[in-house]
Length: 327
Image (cartoon, rainbow, N blue to C red; front, side):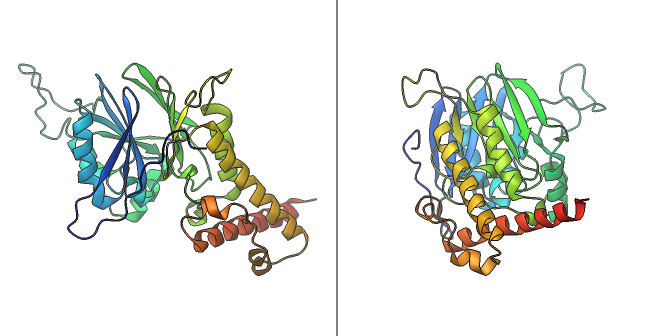
């Protein structure tokens, strides 16, 4: 059961139509923006504003306008949770309007006024992402140098402290892709999942960009076991960590658990059918996602088919690898 009322999902706007950005305040300092169905997190305070996600490219300016209405401090960080166009396409106006808080060695300062003599200093917000996300963006070739991640990491997580709380960007290797991250705002007790968790559809395993079925399940398990908590004893429904999925209403631990169990159940069904010697066509005909299509089938039958195909292919690949490595 979703924690709060569902946020209405805006359809793709017609040409010339005004882009609608919905705002839901989750904490005194943290908001969820929804544009064209994609969720964006905005945390703001005296040190500056942090934005997780940028939304689709055509929505970037509308998102920035809405952020300016709810935040009085400049954007300091834009966090990319993957290289998906729906999540970072609208980054440009957010980054360009920001003022980085990260020191930039070698840039001259006018000692009399305290102003930077380089006109570009402080104009851009820092972009945080895993190194694999930077690699994917460079491969796409659609980004100006200042739009690319400037604060990258290859370790399990990237941490910084701002607005009185710790913010942790946690890498989830080989999940939806090889650069996925989830973001935890410790003081606010809010987690932003990026493409790892989507309330409206089955997981998309982007095998071309390093995604795996096992990695996706591991990522959701990690979110559940290490980053999302509930109150004990449970005294009200809205206690505990709030979870912002890629799409769909703000969620809680129970929603993530339901998603995790769905992935595990479908995997087990496919594993059983593979053990019976069934091929992909036969497995698809057996409808291993039955029971979940109503809740997670918003993207249509094709999404279900692609999910099953990706699970099947990664399982078959794992079985072949195990046979090759067996003594």
